[in-house]
Length: 317
Image (cartoon, rainbow, N blue to C red; front, side, top):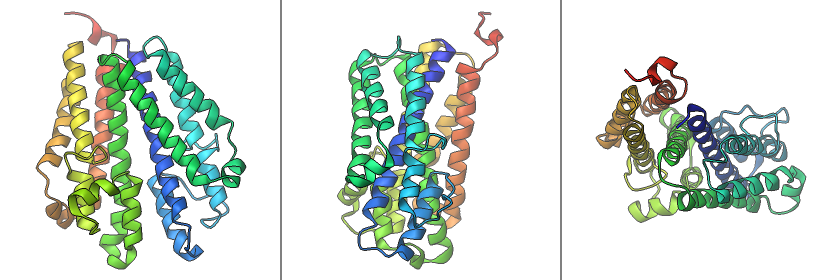
């Protein structure tokens, strides 16, 4: 596969995963505004913005329409929904011969729908439903991808992009919630916020099936970090990431792919054998920072092996 094709598929997938993550956080944040005072909402939206690596708007944390505009329809904000979907569509357009026509049609229609929507329209109608629609459209695209695209090298690069983005975003989200809890005590985060964290990862019902509805911070950390069966846990995503990188290496026979596979395997081993009580006792925020740093190292290794490698590496010996 050409390096430009691998690059476009990888980033198409990352941008779509980022868009879905943003939509989930905004949707959960908006459901919390019911029966809440501005004083209670401000720290919650501050956490949301921190989890998305976005600075608060000039109007402050109480201007929810300005915040949602910044995160949804502001094309100048690279973290906004419209920016992520636009970049995903552009990457898909560059490799239309590699993806199915159904994938392109779904993504193109979704982009046009989001582009035509203004923040005023979102707020005049039911804003939570808009973000639910975004999630459903992105889930539909994922299902179409799995159902219509050959599960070969290109499909594997899509999986790599999806799961490396999911690991990085989930680790940052956990870090934002657990840092004040561990430094300031239980009063820093209440039960409503812990439920919101699980819902932000589409994991509340799955969590309840494992632990019942007893919401405990340590159990939440264990579930979102170390659960091997939940598709939103970091461990599950690390398993999928390593599996796809190994499969790409087998399909391509790339001589310089070992570093990316080794780094992914190291991350997976950390999570396979990790114990949440030991991680919390040692330094959970630091552990999560190291996970994000490992994602960056894996990303760099993928580029060195498959995308920005010197021409000499591609020549037979």
